[in-house]
Length: 324
Ligand SMILES: [Mn+2]
Image (tube, rainbow, N blue to C red; front, side, top):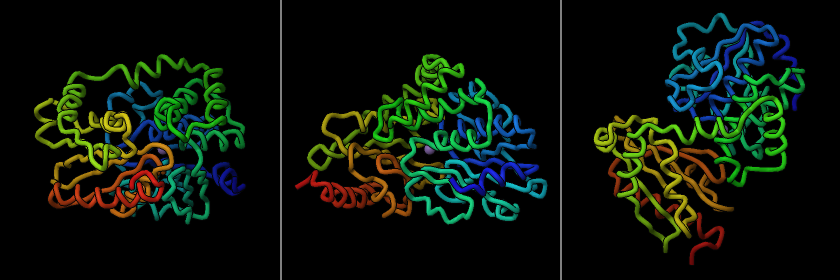
């Protein structure tokens, strides 16, 4: 770890923490763990996320302290970007953050170029939360239950409950440490996975109806439109995790989720198994992410977009010899 980062944190007076739009468990868990840690160090700290917190993450200690608007940045001497592969992931305020004196980047996305001088990037880490702990240890921060619950949520969501290939020995050692600090794994699982509102499940039912298999059963795709959200009475946040249904089909190596945004463009989420690299696929569409989980956007006719994805997927599967 570059010494400069711990030093910059020690020397900072007023710190802005920012994570990405459409926040997930790692974005919020990292943001809030760091928020509590910096308060322990006696820093002035503001936690920012442009979008509202999905209700499923409302249990995270400190989630009510997150602000969604920034009308000024003068007050901050330091900004820390968490779980953002690039500055623009922060949302509309990204440009404004450039005016803050010191910028620190902590992330685990493959596509993060690590260009910022004070960058702590580990592309092999399960989550941004897992990287953050190393910094906390360097800063001598006590692992309180508030911090531990947030970090555990970051790790458990980004590893798909310790199932994905980013789950390592280090991940389990950290999990054990977090349990020691007071985390009750079942309680977090219940909050994150077993407290779904009914409309989210109705949306899943509609989404499953759209599932198609292509490329000799190696690619499964599902679609959710704005009309389907209305029919299910669901919110945009209820689309999270739908792609896992496509990924869970036997023999499927690539799962694709097409989500029609309110403006008519499509957000394309990608998941894969083993060494099949959907980060490479997302990049062809100007997106990014991780080997097994990435995302991109596209505009235009859905059938044409799907054909472009299919062609790109063939290329990806050829690289690993998974298609003839
Ligand atoms: Mn993450």
